Image (cartoon, rainbow, N blue to C red; front, side, top):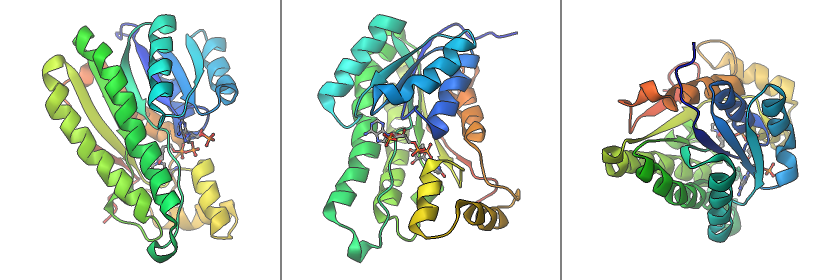
Length: 253
Ligand code: NAP
């Protein structure tokens, strides 16, 4: 039997991949879900998967690095679904390159989506959470936070997400708000497909070589991350805060 009261959840970057799986999972858990992504039309598939299963969801097009866009999006969610008290900062991009070849634009682009985006979204949503004296913030970090060749921008951003998360936990705990980060290892999505293309190997070969390095002997799927987020977003996770949960099929190092 479900014990979760219906709450409103926001998932950014939820048109596909980990975000889409998370939006579906949070809806299955009994929450109304705002499906946010750069392009509203691209959210249609996630929204219809939720609504056709009897859930409540809306699509909202927003660039999470835009202050005006974020404020408008959060206002729209509150008006149409109710005050958001679950936030999953999932939107992300990669712009991989070795340091000496990395254009400043690629450094800035990655910082803007992962860090500025999470900051703006969290700042806009926390007002609803603190008023409700309840909130669950889940940020997407990565095993790359521990360093990864060719990802100086991404690893810095994902390490930054961890410090951001711990500080949110300290500041917002007294308002009934928890903040945690999930740090995935290799997950089969368009993001890792793009990495295979950049490395000029087939996605299938990339999956096989990745699985060989992972203790559980397989790559991760978006549902693996969604399941962990589902727990952290639940009422019963109220004593878990400021944690970084690695979901990577085994320890990285
Ligand atoms: P994905 O398939 O590339 O999906 C990311 C989504 O975020 C896309 O729909 C993308 O939209 C959207 N997005 C990008 N920039 C945005 C912006 N400024 N505002 C709003 N939405 C934006 O990625 P994923 O693999 O599911 O990854 C999801 C999260 O997990 C990311 O934070 C990623 O860094 C993290 N992660 C992934 C892995 C992995 O192995 N896949 C591992 C560790 C961590 P467009 O399609 O329009 O660009």
